[in-house]
Length: 223
Image 1 (spheres, rainbow, N blue to C red):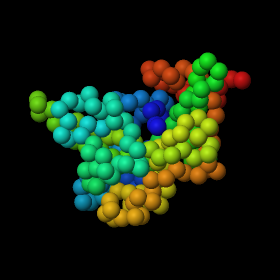
Image 2: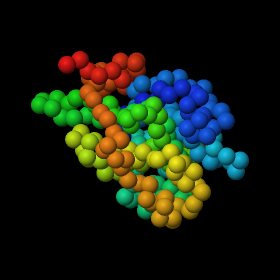
Image 3: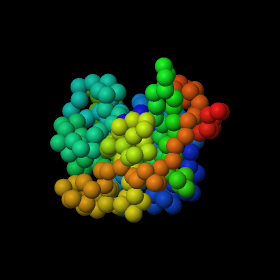
Image 4: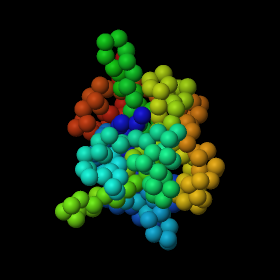
């Protein structure tokens, strides 16, 4: 799964990698937890890509209660095209969620140790996501999102059996709608990045507290 990640890339690199003309106000966020606001990139208008903020935890448009979002922070890549909660968004509202790294916990003895996972030599990458707009009975509209996961690669599987789908940079256009959701090329993106591209290391147990949000979240744990 993907239940916590960080985004600390600078504005210029975000614009370059994701071909954006501008981005909304953004500050380093070292420990992003579900229900928080996250940056998402999509094709919301016909004139190109745009970055917006979304609430993490997808609320289907037909939901009666926004609390369903707490259960839909992730969507399994193997079933995302068929599940009622996700199939409409997969067909029409695919999203890229930028990240610098994500966290996963490894059971060691009686406890669990958090690990930071990132791509070698890269400050940023794009995770495959979906978004929806839900309207409350009060008329308030909430834009929310989910992160698509896949089977973990050999490196991450030492910690967990799932990981986020990390999109190759050259596939961003394809994911954002250059081809139909039914295209085999789109489905082929829902796979793990190679273990050779991945690096991970243990970090402070403080990251278990979502209110802990400092650069220490990124630092290797003292041995």
